Length: 221
Image (cartoon, rainbow, N blue to C red; front, top):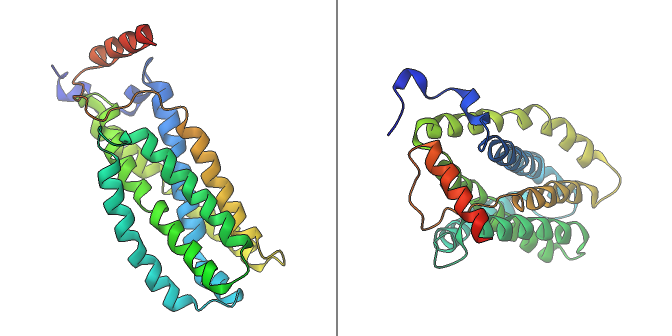
């Protein structure tokens, strides 16, 4: 079913007809996830301190808050629940909303709650993407696709520290969380471009199987 090893695993195979758009779309979603995550996290203690919130205690509670979010994602990605794509949409958009609320609520307690909610939804997006992405590609390029996504998410680390430093030093108090909320809003829009739900479906061993499935889905729709 699979081509010989010397003929598979090439990055150019990710941009073949029928796969190219999926690669670009998923790459954008991964890129925005890394940008938003590191944008929020890098200077979060400094920003929380500038808003009068105890940064160190709340950073501890934030990471504790990630655990139930991961557990919820493990349940919601199943085909009898939301599935992969809808789960991504819910978690991404909820992250956006929580960051906007974080920027505009006045009480320190509510700010701390909003940040915990943000990490509750933001961190599991990585796990959902790690579940969904390999299922999109045929066997011959599945590992190549994952490796490419992991390389892609290293790029935002070169930019987000400088952007974050500028936002923290700004005199506009809500600018820091709202800018990163905008990143997750863009991610939510990019997720709308994902059309093939993989939850409950078998993995495809060849591109021909993928193309046949796309033809059948198009005919049904």
